[in-house]
Length: 296
Image (tube, rainbow, N blue to C red; front, side, top):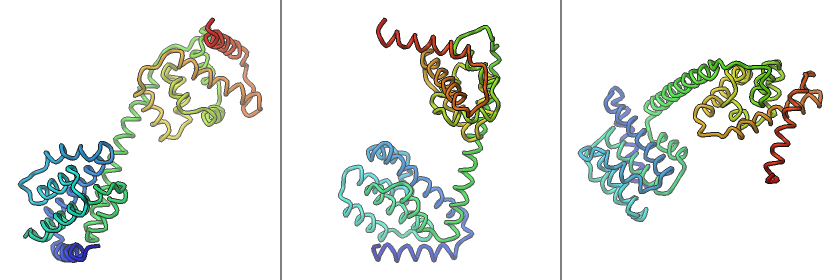
């Protein structure tokens, strides 16, 4: 690490440690860290040119944000790393800000250099955190943990709403309806929880999601009741957010589930069920597929 940078960092941390009650300064550092992660994520997902537009939202009148803008624009303009580093250090040396504001400038400088080098966001995150005094680092990690819990809670709340909505579909499941979708629903209602769990382990999630698009609410509930909260939330999200799916795709997914049941029963892994009708229905769909594949 450059001697000047290290000395400046030490001085900033010493000053900040003697000014721990500065709520405004602490808030600014935490916001600066958040901004760094946003910029790094933007660069990784959309490329360096996307940072140019992001810089337009920075407060050029603020010493630290103006500094970040100039460093980022050098990167966007393709200035070689050595020049970006040297101009950054020159600006910091000439600036008369101290304490929290100076630390933020050091954070912005190191972040800009690392973004230009293309390091991973996780590496950048850990490095910038290492620059902070211990009490600030702890405050940052606590805030990140609280925000992550809030995001997770919102996600769980949304997923719970989706699960309830999907299970409230009260379509009638008619034993006289021999469509593969209806017969799959009847089968799920007949199976035990343990059997459904065994079937779900043998079936790819994409087939479960596709079948659930048209399964009635009671049949969907049989699936949700036998998955973890996390998997259930993921399935509900995928069902609700899935784009247009053809009826033939949904029927194929149901066929896959039913064939899994037939195989597990033949292998003695689930109890015996009367699958005569299902095998007949599956036979019809297999013949239909053969006809389509042969162009008949």
